[in-house]
Image (cartoon, rainbow, N blue to C red; front, side, top):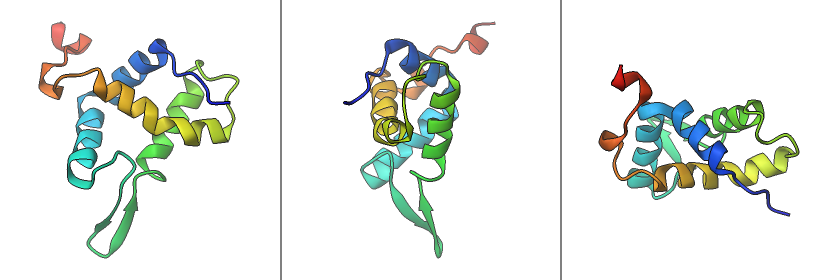
Length: 102
């Protein structure tokens, strides 16, 4: 059974990703058509699922919001989480960050 992604996890992930993380995933979607792209950096493959995706999955594990999830749940849900984070934002430049307000 597919796990539910809570609004709290979406918000916590948005803050964790920050402007740079969101910009990275936006670039993947724009350039390669999906957030978990596989592309070449010169002659070296760059598998987003195994690199940045692993960072997202580890964040999810440590968030305290996915206690009953197993490895398959994380693998099957991280792209959906990133999609929900980014779909909730009009543009990266319109984001209001707590650090910017000080």
